Length: 464
Image 1: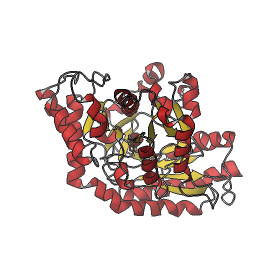
Image 2: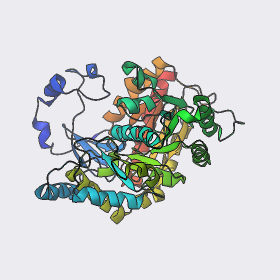
Image 3: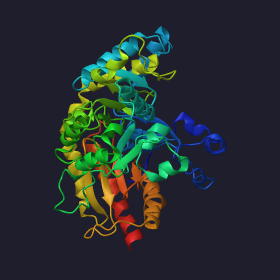
């Protein structure tokens, strides 16, 4: 399905030199900047509405990734812009360093009312990486404050992505993202993830969970501060937990006095059909990290949410969690987040995801007849197709083939045909899909109709 041109190009398309300006001055993130020249344009998105965005030439694309798992309520929500304007007229900015303001107070209370258990203490940040950084620092500070200063290490999973700041990067389990910046913060260590696609049939379903206990014992329980896990692991391709996995992890953390951090930068705010992914899988963390869709990504915002127990050592006398940032809890961001939560509740977006997730899964599973589609996995509105060279043996592509398939063909071809999604090989090659939570049957069908011929052609090109 080709990208759909508009009859009238948006105003930004009239800036003929945008490409040249971008090539001269804009340094994009996680992007091979040498890919762009006079013959290879940089994608420039200028407008969004609902599940769709438009480029500078007026071509329409289905945003099958919610702008990197962010715009959960959809593009172009005017009420969020109105919330910004209203807040600026009242109070443009005050820092949370020693001061408070009404929107941060109201938002903290609102979030605490949505979290499970005693997760009542909300520490605002500007991003997901900062939220994870804050959680790591809090875990270390908590144990120092409670007389266990040797508990500093953090256990995460292989191929898991937890952010790019130096502490978060120590938890991230993706070697190509780590090695350029080594030596990293000491104390980050990793265990197997829950990708069971190639597991032996007789493997204990809780094998991956039990590996966490083995790692704690190996490192020394008196040295481990936290285990940080995503409810549904993003990198590696939407890796769900086995039944009983998080129940077992909770038992392990309690046994060895280790904090359980639920990294929900992606999985919170309806992505799995609940406000928080831990609610979907039924476990109680000590800390939640969140960002992305908290303020719908209309403005940057994140948060670390801690239990009353973890907050307690910092609650009296001269005690202080010596951490913060200037803009965290910004009044404008907090106002947008409050309005965003209003949308979720008014339109029952979480209920929509629960009601439609099965249909989305079934639509994607219809592609399983293609020889390149080895596995379809995920949950809520967050799924991945694992791509294989040989379906019977589950043989994957080698590095050269993966490069040619994903970046040499699929990424560009899907975009040219009007679908924004993620073709990724952090782990085995996958296509990831996470449309806005307002997506419905029409968008599911469009995704499948676009994917089918392109995946089929990709297999013919690479596998012969």
